[in-house]
Structure formats: C-alpha cells, structure tokens
Length: 67
Image (cartoon, rainbow, N blue to C red; front, side):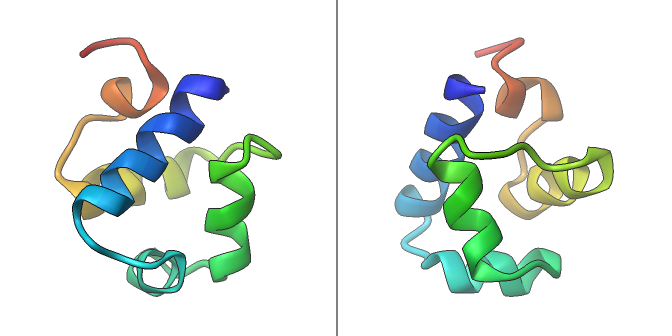
C-alpha cells in the first residue's frame, strides 16, 4: 500500500494538480484522494483503473508491480 500512496502523490504533484482536481477528474471526493495518499485506504478496481487512465499510467505501475 505504501508504494501506491507514494506513486499517487508523486503523479499528482508532478502534474501540478490538487487532490480536489484529481478527485473531480475520476469522480471521488478530494478527501478520498488524500486518504489514499496517506495510505489509509486503497481504491477499488474501478477507481484504480480511473486513476491509471487519468494519469496515463498502468495499474501495475500504480500498484508497484512495474517501474
């Protein structure tokens, strides 16, 4: 879970986006993005796919299965 949280935060910051903007982009509350970045939870499969599409990365990358 730590690698997912770290990668999500890095992708968001590299894109110059707020948690609110990412949340709006994938249809979840900004507090959900913050919680995921803090490692307090993980997205379900549909939200994981939405994040991957939003940031144009693979779900494997987000989950730490590839670099």
